[in-house]
Image (cartoon, rainbow, N blue to C red; front, side):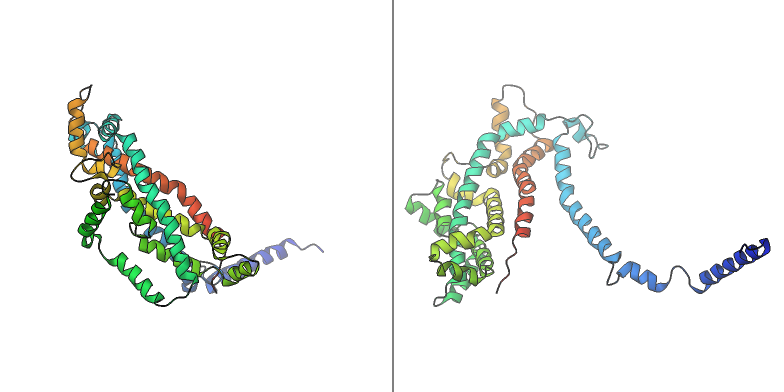
Length: 338
């Protein structure tokens, strides 16, 4: 049945009246809706928490990235750009001459190879010794075990400067002073740079491996070493990546102990690293400028920043590459403790 024109008009007016009444009685934006929008509810996350998290991450990221970006920008500046107060970030005529001169003065590639050896070989030794020690502390019970853990923690707290002289005399009597063995021997014995913290990392991780897996392997005839290599080690990938990353960085950045034990204080032994070359950058650059075939630019802030960037660049690339594998290794590990 079709409605008349007047009836349709009356229905429209009634609908408009109901809509107006609904808007007046139920406002669109209330305090409760505002609270749910900011703080969220059980079903939906609020706006305030993600905003605070991202704001904090942006601030922390700016604190870390600002010096790096300034170092990169200054490294490409010419002397005229440095003297021009109107140029702060973007060079007027970018140049790579600063990086080339800094690399030549530091003997970059030779120092880079020696840095990898100095940092890589003790790191491998740390992985072997610290993983075995951490596994033994996690899986075996013996008298004075807690005292051993306290001593390990104490050796980490004890500053290196307190034992530096006695260690120097010991290495000199052993005949390993001025060689790579000064880093390798302590690392093999679980006494490398910051090795106690690596032992505690492995100890804590191996404690999370379920004992039923070890017991099942032993029932099948596996001994202690087979259980360690077949059961515990494959699940310890996150611990190995973490320890290798931090150990490599600490050995790479260690300039004083490397100069004292490996490179030599009284005489040069041929061992050096990029960090040592950077610490002696001004002296090395003066020698390079005197023997350079082409006229070398006098040392300035741009060349200093270029040398610093070349020293930090390998570690930055390593972090960028290993970050993915580090996160994936943690995601794959679904082991819970008992």
